Structures are given as structure tokens and as C-alpha cells.
Amino acid sequence: MPHPHEKRREHDDGYGEPRQDIHRERRYRRWHLNPLEQHLVAATGEFVGTFLFLFFGYAGHLMVLDLSESTPGASRIMYIAFAYGFSLLVTVWAFYRISGGLFNPAVTLGLCISGQLPWARAPFLIPAQLISCMCAGAVVRAMFPGDVASINTTLAPGVNIAQGVFAEMFFTSYLVFVVLMLAAEKSKDTPLAPVGIGLALFVAEIPGVYFTGGSLNPARSFGCAVAAPSFPGYHWIYWVGPLLGALLASGYYRFIKLYHYEEANPGQDSTRPPTPEV
Image (cartoon, rainbow, N blue to C red; front, side):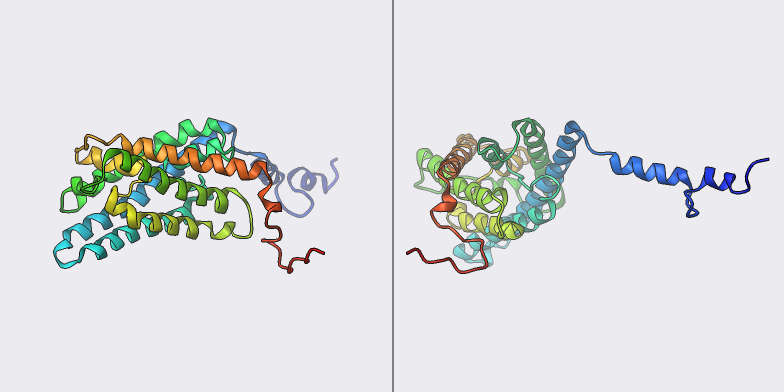
């Protein structure tokens, strides 16, 4: 005859909990994403995040242009810069835990070149960003009145193509370097990196919106151009300029890492005052 407690030992853990539930919990705790699944989850974050960033950026830009008769020219530029800068700030803050919150092929390239993002992830993120920018442009065109072609990135009168390429290079290098130093380079400032990144785009958009259209991002220029559809003859500069900017920023980042920039100005993340050298 079985012992009266034998049945209980078969079906619970001695504390009244079924053994099957414990084993299921243990299996769940051991389960992790494999590398392919990690790339795919990150790609979904980039798709959704890029869509939201550009949807609100495009919609805000279009709204400002619709009200242009009652808005002075300088104020229009500021409002457009606000639309893209603060859309990026909030969206990066929401998505950086999922995919890094890149939303930009140039930023993606810069992180890969600087060694902060594996090259194997770029083929997943960049297509997601480009597909998403087209979706954002198409949704804005379908939902709101106004001509989507009017939010294309175009050069200001008097700005030639060479000037446009180099302007976009410097604008983008500023953004990419801020991403590298605040987000990729871990410090006490890292939790607030989305604020710095959004403000960097806002600052760069102030001259950028007027002189070049303020792309700093091939996806930003590509999405609305496809949705219009309307491509300026020099559309290629909004790919070449940002990619050159990513090379410039990541190259300087590698230089300061190679020469241990932390030693040039030590103690910046310390809560104690630096000890004076004797």
C-alpha cells in the first residue's frame, strides 16, 4: 500500500504548487532569443519607430506649410525644426530599448563603422527604415490635405549641389556624433541621450530646413518623395551627404577612442571633485 504522502510528492513540490507549473516556469526562464530573432525584433522596432518619427514629422511640416500665409518665414523654419526634432526625441526615448532608436540609415552606418553595432544587424534595420518611411509618407498623403511634394527636401535658391552635399554632411555628422557620445558611449548622461539626440536634430534643422531642406536622413527624404511621387534631380545628395557625415563622425569617434579621450579630461562622470595635480 502506498505511503499516504506519496501522491502529494508526485504532484506538488511540497508547498502545494504543481510540479508541472514549476517546470514550465523554469523552461520560460531559460528561453532566450537567438541571434536571428534578435535582429528581427530590432527590425520591427525600427519599422514602427521610423514610421512614428516621420509620420509626426511629415504631418507637422505639412501643417506649417498649410498655415504659411499667417506664419512669418523664420517662424515656419523654427516650427518645422520643432516638428522633426521633438518627434525624434520622444520616439527615440520610447524605442531605444528595442532597437536602439536609430530610424536613419546614416546613423545605422555610423554605428556600424564605429564598432557600436554589428554589421550583421544593418541588413535588417536599413530595409525596415526605408519601407517604413514610404509607409509614413503614404499615410500622411492619404490622411491630410496638402501636397506631400511640398515637404520634399530641396535646395534653397543660390545653394548649389556641391554646397548641398557638404552641408548635409556636416549636419549629419553632428547628429551622428551626438548619438555616439551620448547613447553608444555609456556614461551618466546615457539615460538622457534621447533628449540630446532630439535637440541635436532640432539645432541642425534650423539652418538645414532653409538651405537644404534639412534631411540628415536618407529615409526622411526618400519617404515623402516616393509618396508624392516627386524626386528632385539632385535627390542623390540626400543619400551621399548623410552617408559622408556618418563616415566623418564615426572616424573622429574612433580617433578619440584610440587615443583614450577619457584621460584628456578625466573625472567627468565622477561625483567627487578632481584631485589637483601637483
